[in-house]
Picture 1: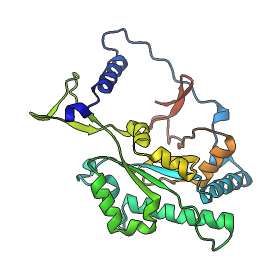
Picture 2: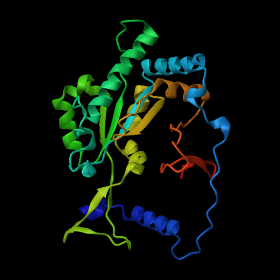
Picture 3: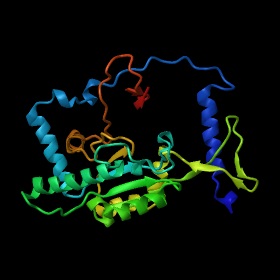
Picture 4: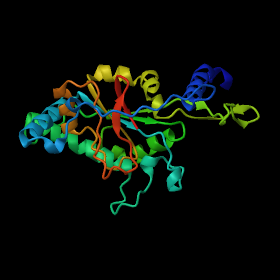
Length: 273
């Protein structure tokens, strides 16, 4: 039964892509110096006057209040680097409050949807369109995570506004491209990574749910981003007012030698180096 479910054709495509990128069996191309992104594609929040910032924030809050903004969380990983097999979002990260990443993010969504309702409908207004929170999990983390949310009463959110779904799996392979076995009769599999989000959104029914719910914008982030401003009204409003199909957030490097990725031109689009 497992053999039938394995997407070996897709795996072959990935392995060929890995071989091409590593330059095996062909001459390596000379690396080109990355080019900076055009100035008209960049907005520095710090350089905007307060009127402009307020304009974008108000638009973002209105969109949130109207139910047009959803939050997409990538939370398939386990906290192995933290010494545990628990889902990352459930791990005690040693805050004085003892709050986990899931709790911090849930409480932000709870507060934000209330703030948005009052911004659009007036002080004391009730939330008419809760922010839908799509949470992508893996086969290793889904059962524990759903149980964790249920035991904590969804941290004040409505059960119906949280949509759990599971990312796909791929066979594990060795460095030389051989499929690994978990046992003599079973192929070893692992989650297909954050790149599997696009297929998972389609196969899980998320896209249909977004269309039915009237969602027009999605703010996507990874679970281990403690400082994330999920559904940041300024960012959402700016992207809408700018007419952007895709927006990316970043912070300036502390120094040229800081070892973090930066956005650059990549072909006709944007990439990270």
